[in-house]
Length: 317
Image 1: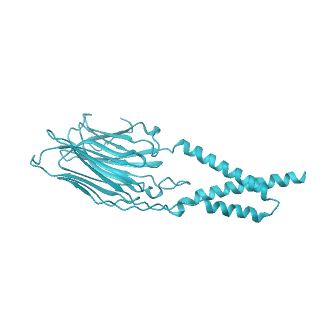
Image 2: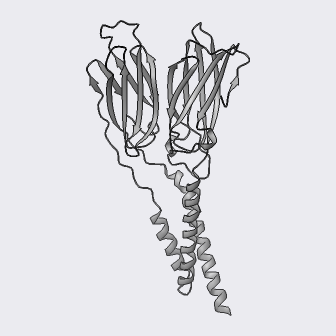
Image 3: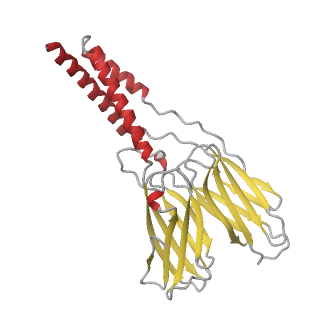
């Protein structure tokens, strides 16, 4: 297991890995499988117990904002999973670049506890830097041509070009969508609080006893899918629960998502419940766009200056 480290002060060791490896993960590309392995002091897997998981988004601080500025530095998800042969697994789609903080707290059946922090560094997609470079080159050439064309007219024309470009570089206001009410199918309930970008949302699934007895365990599979992109952004598979499962989860994109829960009981047909969530979008803060706009204006101004200089230099010959 990668990124693992024992806790010397405790009698519990916690190890963590991702599949694929962290260096191959990119923002909003494909979901990663996150795995925890918990062992006792003698190295044997912890047979019984649970693990509390808390994932926080990278903090802001870079020159360029990420694709979802309101997500930076916020709580992304918090849940508790039972350990099966010392292991716990779930899927997650990392939304932005940066260093995530994963806090894991293990509690064994005899009451022993141990906690550990893990840092997960997600690099930006390479093609985005390529697009940024191409866009800056286009702005420079635009400024260069404008500088040569308007040099004879005067400096005011160059200022008009800058103002025009500034007016074009604007953020569009996201459309706000209403939240659907919780759906109830028979004795199964899938309840989701109103979801807003930047705020964790409570997700709760429950199933009545149905006369099977309180000790009857249910294998629950819960999947959250971004419908527009057809991407699975979170999933847990066949988690043993005693009739209820709850967690907090942040929907980072203001669009429609599907939450599907499939409950499997021994000797019974699987019970499927689906809830469509319309996430309320939030307009990015103006400060998030200022660095990018400043860079683009600087590139255009550099092109204007270079164009004017080249034409004046040619005129002196």
